[in-house]
Length: 145
Image 1 (cartoon, helix red, strand yellow):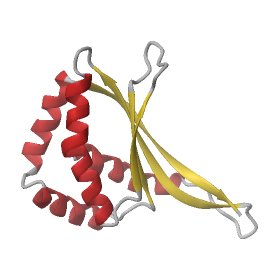
Image 2 (image 1 turned 45 degrees about the vertical axis):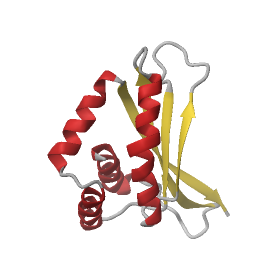
Image 3 (image 1 turned 135 degrees about the vertical axis):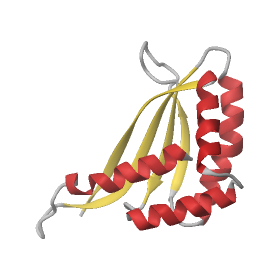
Image 4 (image 1 turned 120 degrees about the vertical axis):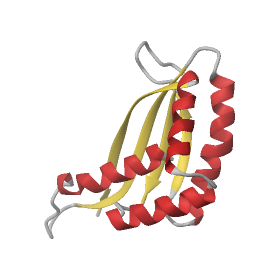
């Protein structure tokens, strides 16, 4: 969950970097795609997939029901080379939330998980034995007019 809100905070901070759109532009700004790159530790794939199919999926479904995200996917890198991730966790958002909205959502998500920030952070740290977060990307879809 911490990564969910961290990605959203980064997204909010990057609003100034979005391309300027003139009235005569041939495109419009579309949705945001957050892509987490995950290297699964040897012997931990099934355990990590169990976690994704449990807590991660539950949080994603809840966020989608709240209207916070549009869709989410897990993609496997079937032909990964050395240094590439095994999995991509993809979440698509309509737009950047404000800082106040991020704070409001965090409180709702913590209540949903019946948890607190410290516990959620500790749980994230415990997943280190299953995976390494190699990084993330935040992409903006450009819709052609």
